[in-house]
Length: 112
Figure 1 (cartoon, rainbow, N blue to C red):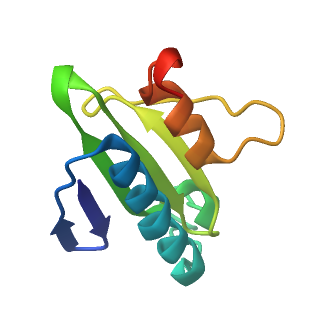
Figure 2 (figure 1 turned 180 degrees about the horizontal axis):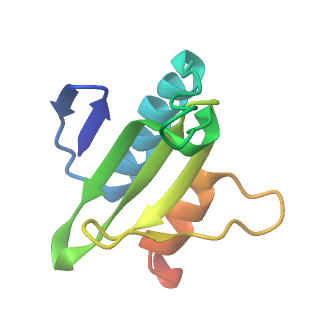
């Protein structure tokens, strides 16, 4: 697992997918609490609002090429994705959190 916050990158290893997914949620929620980006750009450059800025990313990768994670935005919101180089946003269902959506997308149905 990789945790990116600004220029800082931390790595952790887990033996179990459930432990790794729990750690993703724990680290991403901490990033959500500390997210406080300001809008950048403006007159000459395109303006980027905090919701359009990724201030932190927690990624996991596992056997059989399973990859995904959570992006934390500058306004404290979070989005789950699959993939690494070509990330695909995971659509949340109903009141589902990004962490539950990530768990749903990365865990086989019979293991849930």
